[in-house]
Amino acid sequence: MKKIYYHKLIRDKIPEKMKKAGASFVVKKLNSKKYEKELIKKVGEESDGLLVAKSKDELVSELADVVEVMEEIKKFKRISHKKLKEARKENMSRKGGFKKRLYLVWAEDTGYRTNERKYKK
Image 1 (cartoon, one colour):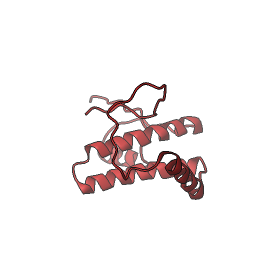
Image 2 (cartoon, one colour):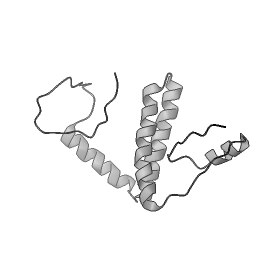
Image 3 (cartoon, helix red, strand yellow):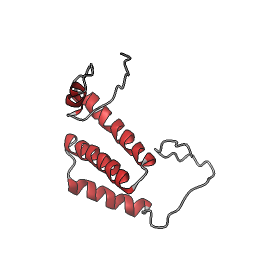
């Protein structure tokens, strides 16, 4: 049977499901440094699911996945709810929120770079 190489962090019960389905597979346990890196990558992967959600229920499920990974990052990095709340408040003060629904079409290059990924329209 054809192998598919995923090279990604998976949830704990996925190997059980694959075993029940009769699939052969290889999983490994990550060290702390690699685990942290994969958690951060997983946020992006789970967030991408929001773009393809077709219904409100799918959107809720994808949001739950994003929150789950974020909660795991908080736990792994020992970030308190209070610390995150303070950072959100600071970001809101510095950058504002999204109530105005502003969409940037273009801007002159001032050297400022965002950390966003490029999405296809």
